[in-house]
View 1 (cartoon, rainbow, N blue to C red):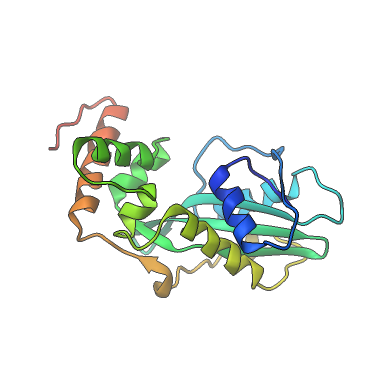
View 2 (view 1 turned 90 degrees about the horizontal axis):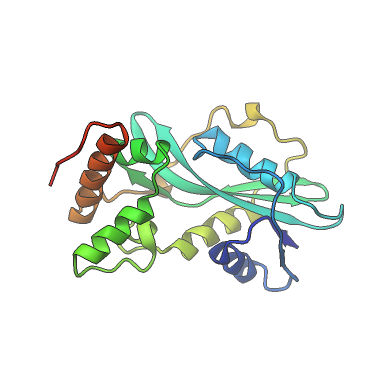
Length: 208
């Protein structure tokens, strides 16, 4: 089995989900320079798996994180694509709700984990799972999110020829939503994103 990533967290999660496989990490030929959104998250996972160097008999796994918008609400999640000789399987992790300010910051190239580190440095709080830990109110860490996406892909139906049309009506089921919009940590991260977006747009930023 091949994982199309050199990311230690992804490699560890794949090994936990497939303990019976010999797993190799390889660099994919496909790169993107933006944070994918909605259907593009699926397509990036698909392209990374499909364009990773592997023999016809090897299984390839790709995991991509992206942002999602649904009915005026915003989320981040991970999409796992498993490429098998017979076709492809797709699965998602939990959908963690983010604010419009967080969404705008991410789309401008920002990394929420950088702001979470600022919160850790300026307070006595610790978020060992990074932004996943904060957004889930300590329910989940990064590895648990990755494992959820991989396991959902493992049990998904096999698809012979993935294409954009099959994902046109993507629905985010409420049972997979993780919402922490009422927490103080969420509000603090939202303010930091607001200030960061203002600075990135050259307008300053002074919300405390």
